[in-house]
Image (tube, rainbow, N blue to C red; front, side, top):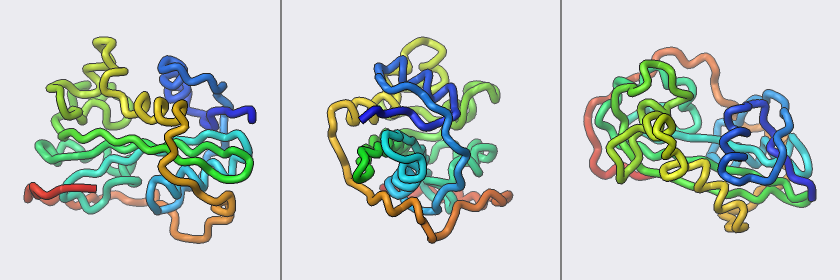
Length: 199
């Protein structure tokens, strides 16, 4: 099977290639995404892109945030409100092998801090400090240490080792469940800290 990275995001393709991914990047369609778990989301995207497609999805789960996980892109502008809250960065890859979608998932716990990039970082990289360090992902990227704390590198390692977490049906291409809402504007903030936060 000739696999390819089905994304039009050049930054993602660049990072995967830097981490040793052998698959070329091919621009994929800009798809709506199911409002579901991360394995179902990449399963759907890979099913739609067809045999050989490798797709990615990123979730950020934040304690006491009503809208998190797969909706992270809708709340990035408000992440400063969750300073000091625990979080878990989760990335999945879905690989279409021609019969089913192989799903690989990696997670990194951490904490939310004020933006260290002054708005320059991609996504939530400037707000997220991985466990075991006192610097944000953005700061590690600037210092050339990104691979040490990259969840993208972690999930790529799992895929190249064929360490499959689950499989999804190609029938997900006909998804008829709910879709992520791109009209979310006001995200409620809960200040109470939950010490039992898990995903």
